[in-house]
Image 1 (cartoon, rainbow over the protein chains, first blue to last red):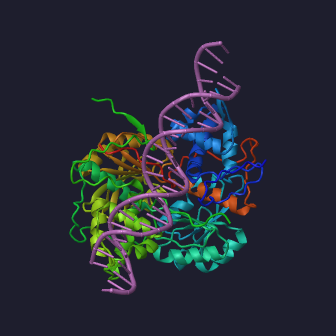
Image 2 (cartoon, chains in turn orange, yellow, green, cyan; image 1 turned 180 degrees about the vertical axis):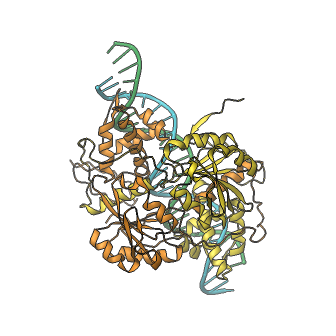
Image 3 (tube, each protein chain N blue to C red; image 1 turned 90 degrees about the horizontal axis):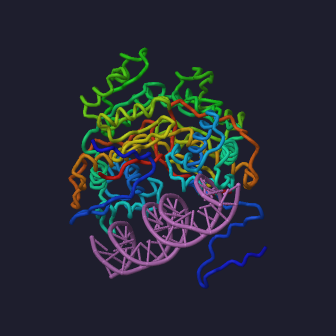
Length: 268
Length: 268
DNA sequence: TAGATTGTTAATCGATTAACAATC
DNA sequence: TAGATTGTTAATCGATTAACAATC
């Protein structure tokens, strides 16, 4: 069992992953990000009555390469059959299990403005096992309002709501200014995953994951590529420092957006 | 007509770079994705009257490392002063120019449901030079409604609206089923950048960029990490194929979501 | 068997990081 | 000058890709 580990003399030993028998190496983050994509495609295939699928078919439906599909799936274990393909059902089961979708997760949404309303009404939420069990807002005029049958509660009840409902995922749709404070309160009460729509960087303790969605960022990235398409393909910026502040940009305080912010913690 | 090559968004073709004298190497995609972040922080600093900033300060405000900041900024040219730092104004100007934010960009939003409404009302949009000049919807009952002063037009006018307003960026907030068709029409009329909120993969010809925002995907990624935190830290899935279809998952047809789908085109 | 498709390897690519010489 | 901070290098890490042996 003692697989002799090769260590180049003098070179510090890489971090040791203590893996007992039967443990897989951790699934790469890039793979994790694609699993939901595969899952969606597979669910659609299952609905259509398809029961086998090749990496190639799955790949084109998901918009990735077949090499990626095979590599990704092999990270979860080997569920395919050479010369044949993958059982759709088996794959759906594996991926759902991998993503922890076998149990419902309770979600608290903070900030019931335009975006908050839109998210609360979003069906793809609950259909995937995410249950918005509560809405919280700071604006007294919104308290008591019902969105999709869920009552809007005052901010002061945030902690009570989290505790009472065993909530582990928080969605922040507040203005930028309020986000960090809300985040702190969520984390203090036991929330360990946060989806942040406020255009601000959240700081969280290790072990808490934050994903950020920022519409303005997405548009600006598109704008970058647009700029390169329109003009002759040359660089828009000279090497000389540009004249001061040509654009009408502000710090931005509305909650909305998209793009991968990073995640905070490791695995405790 | 040259047969337009279909490229599923997300599968990038090898990048061809023809660099003449005086051209910088292309800015790495990872850097591009961070520039909007820096811009936001810098704009806030400028508002506060700060006029110099170090990579270290900028880094912590943006939630990245200072090495990244310096590397990223050096890709745009050298705008800092050793021992001193960067002029906030200069940096704002450079980044804005790099992102092509010096000219306003016209945006068409298709699908004025919950999310579409929320986006149309989002302020961070116009404050960054993105002007939603039109809203289009397939539902006759929504036609004529005004959102933030912009009238909702019937789907049939899509092409006319794009042409009349010189629109290059389209935002798709339709249900999944309608998205590809809308996408095709947008592209056919000259739109070269698409922000897709529909939970489906869009296929576009080369030269068109697609970014995808998928809330369900974001939540599922969080769920993955949640699963690893709750349980003992061990793997949730056994190596043996899991029992069939434990999770209530559907193909999902509402428009919403987040997560980096990739971008389609290179640089024509 | 012959054809198809997986699982895995090794090469490559791009991004991150640490470190430090340059220089204000 | 002495202290601070950039710009750049080289090492490292992680992800992608192509290719193909294994095998159904």
